[in-house]
Amino acid sequence: MKNKPFFALFVSIASVSFAAIFITTLIDLYNTSPLSIAFYRLLFTTLLILPFVLFHKKTRDELRSMPSSTLAIIIGIGVILAAHFALWITSLEYTSVASSVLLVTAHPVFVGPISHFFFKERLSSVNALGIVFSMVGVFILVVGNYGLGSLTLDSLEGNILAWLGGVAAGLYILGGRNMRKTVSIIPYVFVVYSVGTVVLFLICLVFSAPLYSFELPVYEIILLMAVVSGIFGHTLYNWSLEHVHASIASVALLGEPLVSTMLAFAIPWIQQIPSKFTLLGGAIILLGIYLTARKASAVEKG
Image (cartoon, rainbow, N blue to C red; front, top):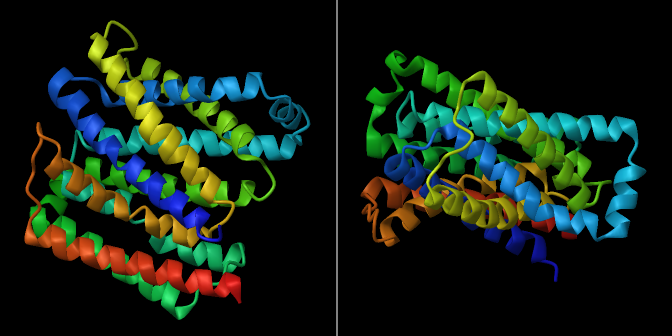
């Protein structure tokens, strides 16, 4: 099935989009620390992956025989993933949703060119047009809904955190695309998630974020987030990186705000009605993703 990677990418984006719903529920209803959410999300995801390592000899053998240079790079990617979660989720406490979403989803701007010049993944004029369309769509969706006032310097700290979270997301995608060419999915994500979990645990200790004594529903919601957004989201996304260009994968993530908006409208306890800016921006985002993926698919076939 030639379109299997693109279908997997679609499922992963839809699954990742549930994360905003889970996080909003945890923060609003249970006053859960963002760093605590990030730590337990990766911890539970790692534990879900663990049986596939313990009971799969081929995976264990690949981990044992992994070159030290490869392992060092993957460990670095795990640190970057932890940074992305910590920076992005924490930014929501200091700046508006508008600023956070706009800045954290800006990674296609540099992922595409870096992939073109350093990874030899050709960025055609149609690819570039697709990236531009998608970024314009995000701008319309976010700024149209919330206005430019939220992008002022009075939220500079939060804006910087969100932008750095976007940079980390871009590096995470680029690193994953490079490593997935030679490393199987389970060994790769197991190391990345494990390292990310340890790093987030240390971050929680440094910033005195709670690590226990949560209400039972908090653990249940985070476990559900680990299954949906962790396994079917990030893990499936990492699998698709072996088969699609990093620029496509990066642009596809711009669909997350759109899907999250639709989920927020459909879920009874949230029921946020999408505005005309959301519908217009969302349509442009989908057009951008289509243009980028369509051209790249044609290039790969040709």
